[in-house]
Amino acid sequence: MADPDRLAEFERLLEEAGGRLHRADSLDAARARARELIGGGTVARWREDMLDGIAAQEAPPAKADVSLIVADVGVQSTGAIGWAHGAGRPRATGLLPTRQIALLARRDLVEGVPEALHKLGLTSPSPPSNIVFAAGPSRTSDIEQRSIRGVHAPRELDVIVFP
Amino acid sequence: MHEHPQAEPDPGVSLNLHRAAGNWGRQRGVARARVDWEQWRERAQAVRADAVGHMDELIALLSRRVSAAGGHVHRARTAADACDHVLRICREVGARSAVKAKSMTSEEIGLGDALAKAGIDAVETDLGEYIVQAMGDRPSHLLAPAVHLSAAQVAELFSHESGHALDPDDTRGLVDYARGVLRERFLAADVGITGVNLAVAETGTLVLVESEGNIRLCTALPRVHIAVMGIEKVVRDLEGAAHLVQMLPLAAHGVPAAASTSYITGPARDGDDGPEQLHLVLLDGGRSSIQGTEFEAALHCIRCGACMYACPVYRQVGGHHYGSTYSGPIGAVITPLLEGLTPDTAELPWFSSLCGACVEACPVKIPLDDQLVMLRARAAAARSARAGRRPDPEGVLFSAWAALWSRPAAYRATAATAGRALAPLWSTLAREHEDGGWHARAPFPFSRFTDGRDALGPDPEPFHVRWRRSRG
Image (cartoon, rainbow over all chains, first blue to last red; front, side, top):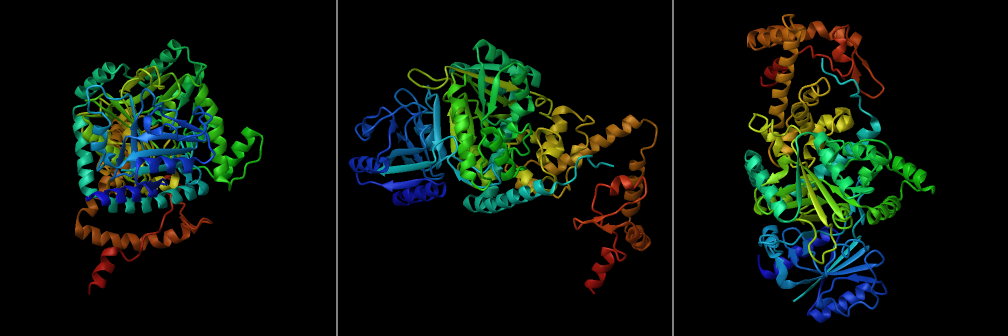
């Protein structure tokens, strides 16, 4: 699939799953977009250089309104983003706040699940202890089949793609 | 004959199930347009057949890889052994409270009761399962445990628990209430207990698939993670796992990916906030006795629930009437295989019209209809053996009927006569019931058949006569 089509297909599936895609022209533009989306909310974030200085007000994951992370991979065939947890990348960050924002580099968009698993290091000799893929926000239809977004994990998912 | 004493449809259950099955039917159409469905099924079947065919070898490899990644592996021959392992681990780590993510395997081994007896405060965290647990009820579907309950029942429960009146029409409010209650439990729990959807032997990775995020919380916040899995859930490699991980949400909900999928390889490492300990409990529970038999394909099941919504019997009576952990067509097959043909399980293979809709829905192509027929034969043989030299009246009747109607001339001669003879009798016996069905009350011993069934009378003009006439 041609490059622009790959992003379009990823966007279609992400939005079908209830997430939102934002296109940015540069990393700076992506950071600015994240700042807009955060608004006045408090932020729990990973210790990643590209996330430094975006949030005005930080808070621990259990208290924050918004979580800010870096997606290591986007999967065209499923519309999911994936990431590995580890030092400076706590599991609780992307899990406890009700809103989640993820930055995704355009070059990290892959075609299918096997490539994504490889990219995340699962085929390496010492794979990460915990890898998560999220396709849209968490959801349930346990009460009379009524679909509700946002159960235990975030209710909203914004993915900002930059070159 | 073989009517289950409790198998009367409950209108409320039936309504919810029909709604759920209708949703599933639409989703299935969408799913099939997304991929080359038949080719995907072939591949999924091949992955599962390879795994189950080499289960011993792959379980040994998985155990080595999980240990190498820093996890602890515990083998359990029986359900009781598996519970013992979990309780021992809880004792060793000094656990007082546990959060559980929905797992049919933990349901199968009765882990909830075992934890409660041991004084460990364990709460189910999947919304449907939480509701079912709080009601003192049991799950009725693999993926939608509370599908048999109404919003009004849930609102009543939550209102009672919280002391505030909650509106059944405010689904968001009901979900948020449960989220709030459970969030506190997650933050306080010592142990997180989950099932496993797949385990990758070559990498020692446990794959967990979910919608709500409660599995991620169970594997992120508590200091100990215990995963309980049936040994048949192993797959050889990541490539096979990647295929099944996409097939599962397609078959279950018609979507290309579940809301969250976790790949867990060992406990947390330096600087990671996850659990310090990972324990994997491998349950046999009768599975290895199915391997190598004509029923081996039943172990290929990936627990997607598609056969349940496809099944006209399940849709009518719901999951509870099976009286077993696994319900629907796969439950009717796997339960007698795991537990043996006991008085409790021997009737399950009759919970089917043998229409084959389950086979067509199954993403790993398990021949459920063939297996149901083989199990019926086994159950009948066991009954004859128990009867000893006394003739089994049902067997004699059906053998005679089969002998007669296997001959076209005899069939033609007797079908019309039987229809004409029985029709007036039927019209006096049958009456229209208030639910719109026709209930017949035949005299004993035939009442044993008619009491639990809608019975349409025989047509005085048999089908073959009408067929011949319509074709001129």
